[in-house]
Amino acid sequence: MDVLENYTGHVEPDGPAARRTLDALTITKISVGPMDNNAYLLVCRSTNEALLIDAANDYERLSDLLGHIPNRPRLRTIVTTHQHADHWQALGALAGAHGSNTVAHELDASVLPVPPDVLVDHGDTINVGEVPLSIIHLRGHTPGSIAVLYDDPAGHPHLFTGDSLFPGGVGKTTSPDNFASLINDVEDRLFAVLPDDTWFYPGHGDDSTL
Image 1 (cartoon, helix red, strand yellow):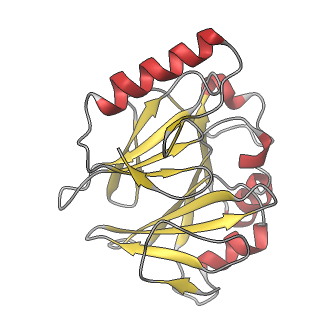
Image 2: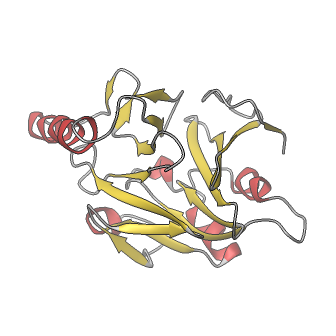
């Protein structure tokens, strides 16, 4: 697996992954599957424990992100941001192969192919190694859509938004009520509390800042 170290937020389908190195963790982004889904591997630099956000597709490519050497990162956790099938095609295979704990919101859990080991809600904290990550419930794209926030004490926050927020606007909704709910949550739970330089990582396409 080729991994580019000059992180820009852009990756190509079937192309190399891209890695961003922070003080406490690394973030590696890859595009997988026919819908150009983004998957993000977070690795704690102190413990070498890993967390994957959205095992969307291409089990082999996602496994290759971990490498094949004896001291490769240990995939302890897989977070699914929401219930849509393009975000969990490799979930069962990857969790089974690595013995990973799976994490999702209760309102989306019943649709997933693997019952989550951990159910999360707004305001909860999960960890990748020694690094805490906050869960933000963004209601509207699906009932249980979540974002995952790493508030880097040495820099700006890093926010993984699934399909709830993209550069230019919120994700798809299926009714006026769902649209209003998602807009309100994005405004109240993201824009009102996070700085403008927060870098966010969506479920498809390029990254941006708030």
